[in-house]
View 1 (cartoon, rainbow, N blue to C red):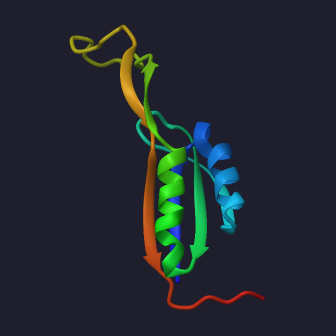
View 2: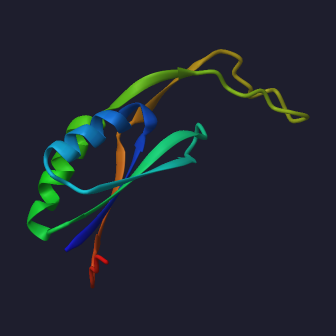
View 3: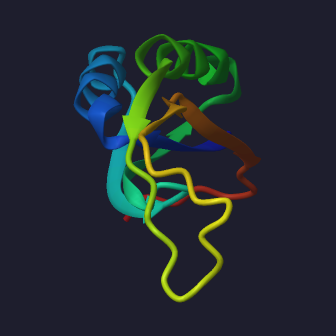
Length: 109
């Protein structure tokens, strides 16, 4: 048995949840925050048998593609403004960060 933890952008979370449940994966969905943009993320926790791990990874990959987004940089406060760029920057966002962990025991009460 494996435990899959996938951190995805909020924009992808509903589509991913629907796809996982349609393929009979049991999923726990947690709100999370972090990353460079300090924007909302969703962390999915999925427990599954070893033989279904690749299917879960394929579903995550299909539903959580990275994309380009314009962001306005935050101006420095009291610091050196020589390197400050006052116009929006295009950065890559989205995708998924996935951890697959072995599960030593599983209990359901």
